[in-house]
Structures are given as C-alpha cells and as structure tokens.
Image (cartoon, rainbow, N blue to C red; front, top):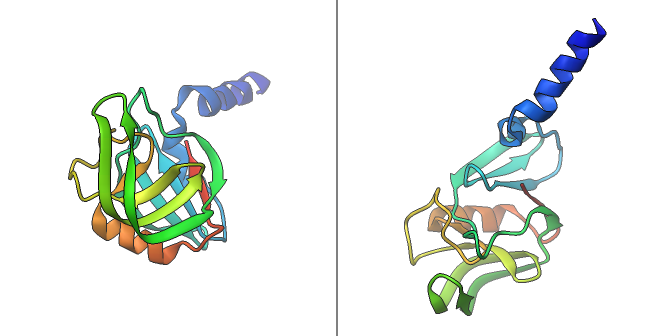
Length: 149
C-alpha cells in the first residue's frame, strides 16, 4: 500500500507537467495566472476561471519573469513603450493600451502590432489581444495577484 501511495504521489508531482493542474488553483480573490508553456492567461474570481485568452510572452533571450507578483501600476494608455530587443533591435510603440505592471518593467498590455497570440513573441512583457487587454484592465485593480509559471 505504501508503494502505491508513493508511486501515485511521484506521478502527480513529477511525471505530469505543472500546467495541467492550472484549473486546480483555489482562491476566492481576483487573480491572474500566466502559463508560459501554453501561452495562455486565465483570470480568476471566486475560485473559478472567469476569462481566458492566448497571449504572447517573452522570447528565449528576453524571457518573461516567473513568480508571484501583484499589479502595482496601471495606465489606460502608455504614450510610449520603447527598448532594445535582442531579436528586433530598438523598438518604439506609441499609445500602448491597457498597461498593468506587475514586476519592474514587466507588464500585461494590449498589443496592436501583431496578431500572433499563443506564440512567444515579446521582449518579456505579456502581450494580449486588444479586447482581452481591455477586459483584464477593467477586471483587475492595483494589488491583484499575478502568477507567472
């Protein structure tokens, strides 16, 4: 019996990928999870998923940070978002919609410059389709937990 319990525990902890258990998260507060392997975001409230969407996260040389964070700053529209990408060089996007920062310069935001969600594409931020970015911006107040795994 002990061997069976150990075997089952091993299978659930190590043999199955973590992202298969995203639906098992239990919370009563608002929360956002970003599954990097699946390139998918889920918004939670009252212990259930209330919204989900494909996203585009960071490329290998500019990965999206993993961990548990909280939204600390929101901008309905950010006048400029610029930087240097190891893939495309300098970039400068104007009027980026629905920006929500969760760690240093990492944020969730709308991306009007591509429509290739579900594929890694960003310089580290979590790119969202425009309707999803608007919905999420209205859903999540400052202080909302963001889990990136």
